[in-house]
Length: 97
Image (cartoon, rainbow, N blue to C red; front, side, top):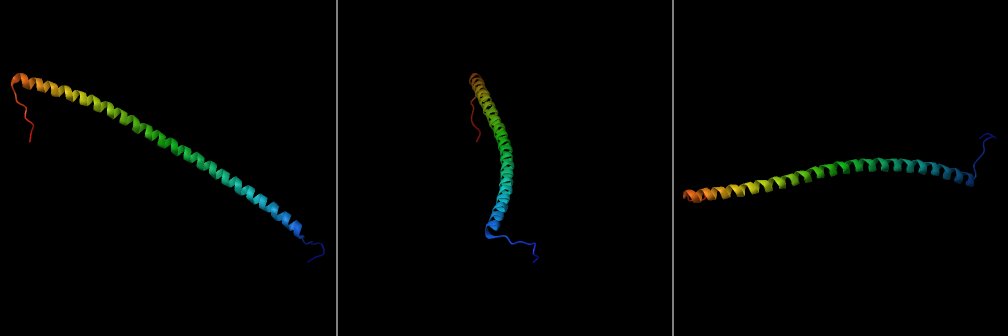
């Protein structure tokens, strides 16, 4: 060891270690915050996609319910007309076996 080199004392070493740890934890915190932000954005996008999909399914179900009600009403009218025709023509309607 040359006479210009100097040894750190315990307090200097401790201070240097604390500074290095502060830098390291600062960088780690930035990285974690960045990743969490990215994950938050990705989760919001996926939630929006799921929400849009569910809205589409709900709309189709609503349309299906309306169509089913219209078909049911039309079927009831047809049954009524068939019953009237059968009665007026003396036709006995027997269910198929």
